[in-house]
Length: 93
Ligand code: FES
Image (tube, rainbow, N blue to C red):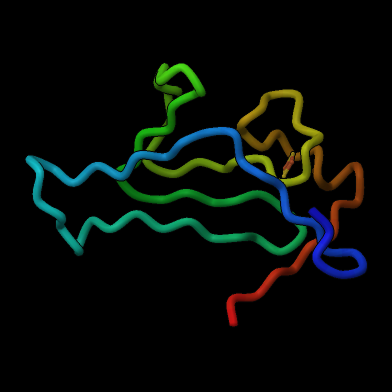
């Protein structure tokens, strides 16, 4: 989806489940997703990422999800965004 000139939004086809630990939300362990300028989504914290069939991706406590669409290791970032000159600097209002 093109919001304005040069800024595109990609629909992520994966689900990120945030682990709440024994059914209770622990704010000190709240997961965080950072939208990196001209790069991937950086995910930190206890999360579980699954594919469309519910299969769990093996991840570390911190990992990057491709936002440019050019990774050869989707859904993870492989650094290809630099080669293709991906540009996007969205800001929360
Ligand atoms: S954002 Fe890094 S390869 Fe796509």
